[in-house]
Structures are given as C-alpha cells and as structure tokens.
Amino acid sequence: MFRLHRHGIASLAFIGLLFFSFLVPAQAIAGEVMVAVASNFTAPMKDIAARFQQHSGHTLIMAFGSSGKFTAQIHNGAPFEVFLSADQVKPEALIRAGFASADSRFTYALGRLALWTTTPDVDVCAQLHSGQFRKLALANPRLAPYGTAAQQTLAALALTDSVATRQVMGENIAQTWQFVSSGNAQLGFVALSQVMSGGHINNGSAWIVPDNLYQPIRQDAVLLKKGEPNPAARAFLAFLQSAEVTELIRGYGYHRE
Amino acid sequence: MLLTAADWQAVWLTLKLATLVTMLLLLIGTPLAWWLARTRSVWRGPVSALVALPLVLPPTVLGFYLLLALGPNGPLGQLMQTLGLGLLPFSFSGLVLASLLYSLPFVVQPVQNAIEAMGERPLEVAATLGAGPWDRFFTVVLPQAKPGLLTAAVLGFAHTVGEFGVVLMIGGNIPGETRVISVQIYDHVEALSYAQAHSLSLMMLLFSFVVLLLMYSLNRHSRLNFSLSRP
Image (cartoon, rainbow over the protein chains, first blue to last red):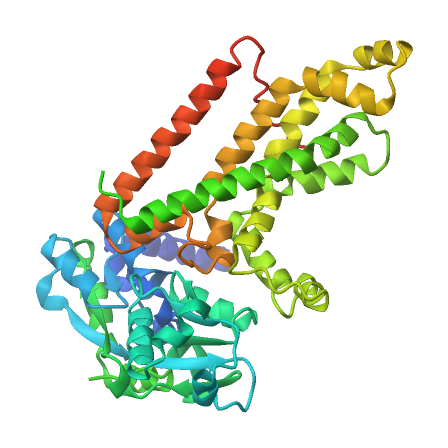
C-alpha cells in the first residue's frame, strides 16, 4: 500500500516535470545550433564542438562542405545559423545581401598551406624543385583560397611554367587531399590542418610553406540572420574566440590573430 | 549568350567524350545485350546485375573507387604500369573508361529489350532458309533491333553528356583534357558566377532537347523502346 503510494507520487512528479519541460523553451535548457563549416576546418571543428557541448550544454549540428555551395544554399533558405567560411569574400557577400549580420563577422582562423606527400622522410620542397613527380595536386584557385595560395607559392618559387602541364585540380581542398592520399598525385598543396594534429605531421612528409610566399588565408565566421534569435548561436561564436579554442586551433596548424 | 573560350573548350570536350563513348558502347554493348537476351547460362543473372550496378551506385562513389583502383597503388593501375601503358586518372582516356562503365546499362538494356521483344520466330525462319549465325545477326537481329539501338545511342550519349560525379573524382579538372561541361558549370556555381552558369546550362538544356527531339522525329514510325529494366 505504502509502496504503491510512493510510486504514485513519483509518477506524478515525472508527469509534472514532463509538462514543465514543454512549457519552457528548449533553448533555455540546451540549445541547438546549425553550423555550416568549410571542409578544411572539419577536424578542428569536431573537436571544438565536443568541448562546446561540455562547456555550455548546447549541441552543434554541423554540415561540412565547400563555402561556395553553402553560400548558394543560404541564399535559398538553408536553415544554417552560423557560417564558418574558408575565405572572407563569401561572408562579406552574405552580409551585403542581408543574410548575415555585419557586426558578427570575425577571422576565426588563418589557414596555412603545406606541400604534402604520402612518402615518409622526404624533402618535399626539394622534390618540387627537382621536378621528380608525375602529378602535382592543388585546389582550384578559382574556388578555394588554398588553391590561390598554392598558385601564389608556385609563382614566388618561379615554378608556375614548369609544373603547368603536370598539375591537377581538386574542386576543394578535401578532394586535393584524396588525389595525393590515393597516390594518383605524388605531391599536393593541401591545408596544413589536413595533415597535422596535435602539432605534428601525422602521415607522410610535408613542407610547411613559409607565410611570406602567399597572401594570408583569412577564414571568416559570421552569424546568419536565422541564428540571430538563438542565444546558443551567439554563445558558440563567443566560444570560438576563446583562448581555449585559440590553443586548440594552433595544434591543427592554423594561425590566429 | 556569354560563353567564354573556356566554356567552348568544355563543350567541345564533352561532345568528343560522349560521341566516342557512345560508339564504343554500341560496339561492346550490342554483343553483350545479344548474349544476355539469348543465353540460358547461370551467369546471366550475375552479369545482368553487374551491368546494372551503375544505376544504383552514386557516381561519386563509383568515381572514388575507380580513382583507387586505377591509381598507382590499385590493382588496375599496377597492371597498366606493368604493361607500360601509363595511368588513367586525370586523362581523357580515364574519362572514356569511367564513362563506359557509367553509361553501360543505358546502352545494354534497351538493346536487350529490343532483342527479347523480337522473339525466336524470325531467327528460326532465317535459319530454315539457310542463314548462318553471323548472317542472322547482321541481316535479322540488327535491323529488327534498330529502334532499341537508336534508343541506346541517345541514352548513352545523353547520360555521358550529363556525367558529373565520376569526372569530379577521377578527372582533376584539367582544361581541354578532363574539364567537361558539367564540371565547368559546377565551377561557375561554386565561384558564384551564376550568370555564366546559367548561360552554359541553358545551352546544354537546349542541345539535349534538340538531340532528343530529332531522335524522336526520326523514329516516329518505329516505336522507341525507352524502358529501362532493373534486375
């Protein structure tokens, strides 16, 4: 009899709690943020998302892809709330078109370029100069800032003409990485973050291209109009600028201003 | 129309690829369809399934595995190197091979359907009149299967023109070599040059429409066999 009574109170409390949870807006307890992320930032982003959830209780729903595709999707009603672009041009364009708020834009990472091969213990820079390779992969300069940086590097090294017939272009930096990792291209200009974690090159050999050979790759983040009413979206952008994230991003080979 | 020199180069390359692939597919696909339509072998099922696989596999997945298989570490790539033939990814020949696989069911199935629809009777009659197997194939089967062959050619051509995912994976976007129309349009879209993307897309759309319209008008009297059967 007594047990039954206690059980009754427990279920009543449970039902009450359930009812209460419907009354309180979900975001006040644990929010969700839809984030569109440039594919070069995939690895650090997953790490950041886990930490952000631990800190704030908010969950990040992430889509990884090319910045150009995301821009077109946002123009056409995609439900993203925050956009981490691979460049500055696309967030700017979104602000001008009224899809993002101007005051929220900041550079979350400075991308760095690496010349990479899957063969271990190789002087990759020397291999580029000697021309001992069949194909050199780089991202399409028209689409990817890392491709533009690769082009600038080749020009600075006066190698543009000698590699012209041997270069293959990935539509983005992820595809460029695939061309090299499958062995179809012996060398490739990739994002340092794709081959580095915890401050070390994790596969093959890489030459970290000196910063003075190419224009800095500024990657901007922006709060989209759809994310403005969501406090979790603002909380995430603040977290992205924290010292903890700065440290983490460096381990993946990015600079930070 | 504001098509650039690079756009025209992509158009020309695509036409070259689709024409070559269609001709090769008719050469390879017709005997294969003939065999599939007539055989009682236990291999009929597995071979039909293999031929139809590209209908099911996402093109980027097909392209990815071709990139691995044809690469220097892949079995086919190593065979090519042993034979001294050079590697296929990032070359026009590579696109031809990938397109052959990718468009195979679109050629084999209409021809197979046409031959099956024809039945045994015309062949038996020809045989009693003393026609040998080759004679029967060229003077009975091919003319009877003409609508099916035409359908196969149109579908094979159109499907190759529209190819995208496979090229993206094993093409490497090399101007004049592997940068076909679909990749060029995608580049325009990604670079936010929507006007150029629209012009090229419109041209491709009109071209496809005209080709299909021509085929349908030419084939008005013989019924087009447009059904694709999945195993």
